[in-house]
Amino acid sequence: MKRILVAVGVLFLALLLAGGLFVYSFRQAFRAMGKMPHMPDNLKVARVVSGVSLFSGENLLQPS
Image (cartoon, rainbow, N blue to C red; front, top):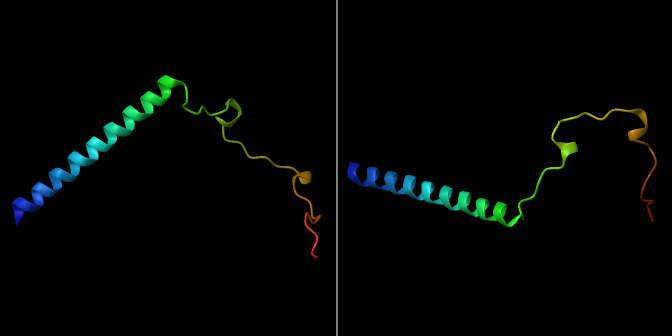
């Protein structure tokens, strides 16, 4: 029973490693093709927007 658990664990780790390598190579191929989305420069720094005029009490949809 112990050998079966060890074999299943090793198989699981091998599949996890193979999946990680697949995802890594897929990302590298997308990056090489130029299709990898880039984060805009204005979103790289976290910000909190504050102000009185950001939210208003007016209804956008009127009940029918």
